[in-house]
Structures are given as C-alpha cells and as structure tokens.
Length: 171
Image (cartoon, rainbow, N blue to C red):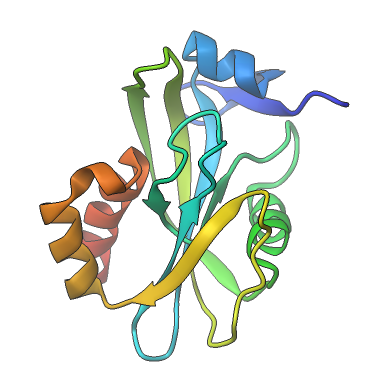
C-alpha cells in the first residue's frame, strides 16, 4: 500500500517538504491541513464522529470533514476530494480563515497543523464512508456549544479551536 504523504510547511504556510503522514504526526512536524464546516439551510452544522480505529482522536465528534492535501495538491481541490471520500457528497465551499495549533496526545502522536477552514451549505443526506465515520448528525450551534462546554472530552481539539474562531468570524 502506498504511504500517504503530507505537505510540510513553515509558519507562513509555504511548502518546504513532504513527509509520510504518520511520521509527520509522530515527529510533530508542522503540516498543511483543512477543516470543512457544512451547514444546512436551518443553520445546523453537520458533524461527524470519527471511527474508533483512527490513529488519534478516534471515537470523537468533529467538524464535517478534516484531512490533509497531498504535497503540491491545491488545498481547495483536496477539500472537495476528501469531502466526497469521507461524507459522500460535494458542495460549494469557500475558505474563511486559517490557524495553526499543536497538541500532543497520550499515545505520543502530535497534531501540529496549519489548518485552512472552509465553509459550505448542504441540505441533502450524507453517505459517509464507514471506514472513516462512525456516526453523523446535524446540530444547532447553541446545542453544540452547550454540549462541548459540558463534555469537552467528546470532541476533537482542532474542532473546539476552529469552532471558537468560526463564531468570531460569523458574528
């Protein structure tokens, strides 16, 4: 099986190399990523529960889709590709902001990402990839934020950070 590669970037998101995805996470190298937030016309967010077998954050709730572009792959093209692969649909999306964050997990894996955040609208029913996603739901932002406050351990680190930044942008 071909190893999945990620783009290693500097603090300004300039691509400076590439690394095998797992190795980049083991060594904590800053790499490019994206997070997609999809809302329906009722203003509810589509969130997913990652399968328990993920190498980190398995079994946790997160935004609609999150992944990494391949080295040299345009971020928007990668975002559409992964939205189809993970959630079984595609829609118009636009980048609204980016941020960096670094987290070390109990298993020694790091998330050190330059994360591009995309926003889109979709009113259909997703057809999630069961190898990636255990569950999904549309949820109102007030209900979601209340649950995150009560149960922060049920959600991924980057989702909580991005959601706070998204709230600032949307207000």
